[in-house]
Length: 336
Image 1 (cartoon, one colour):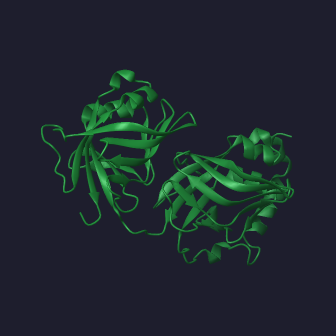
Image 2 (tube, one colour):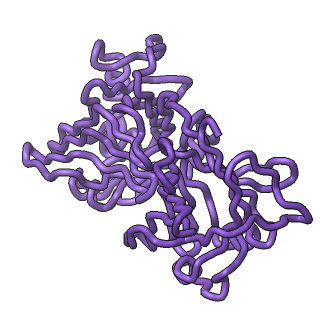
Image 3 (cartoon, one colour):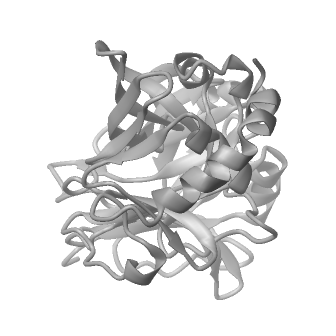
């Protein structure tokens, strides 16, 4: 049975079940009870797309505590407490979801902004399948005409082929489920690295479909485009580790967990191409800061000019860009 036929056949039942879902007592929080304390580690809130919600209800969805499902602002949301502080590009969660129809349970969600997947411990009718990729992470999408506001890291969730198969609806692979908003609790700041991008390089990056991988950010400052990457922990010798990264939709490249090594003069990153991990690769060569639009950006920390390595240029599908000046980095650890 296709997903469309399942929804048509069960539309009335899904409506009734949804009403019960958001008013069913202590396991669920109704719309009048949406105020709750944020867990110590933070919270991920998923605003569910109405079409996907009907599909989930028809499959007998229910939260696994401490997850909650409730109505809020005219939408249905599911909340998952973040379990501890994020580690690099990983954000772990407690709780999960069960589906009484196919006998599926998914729990201990792990968001990996580097791989672009949400994995979960999965069982089908009591048989443990271990960690499986359940959702693909992508850009947030409009729901009922608008994209939900998010104060943290926003991502659209689509169902993977593996998850759709486990749920017994293989035709639902790629179904947009909803928009996630990941808001970790405030962690100690270890500083950040700001990269002022050269206009020529910026044009090349935009043509490749560049986008930040949270918690990295790209914005404007004093007329320049700047990418910022939070430093992940104290500086260790000549090593400075960072959270976040960059994705390139054109060549299907993701680089994350930047590691600056002032001893070797390289910035390495965990690298994947079309989902295939290449491990740590040298992405940028560190050199002297260079003028951008006529002047060298001011830096209160450690300044370095970044040029693209041959390996990185090849991965991006533009081998002629090897040696391209990308911009000037300013590494400012906390207390610097």
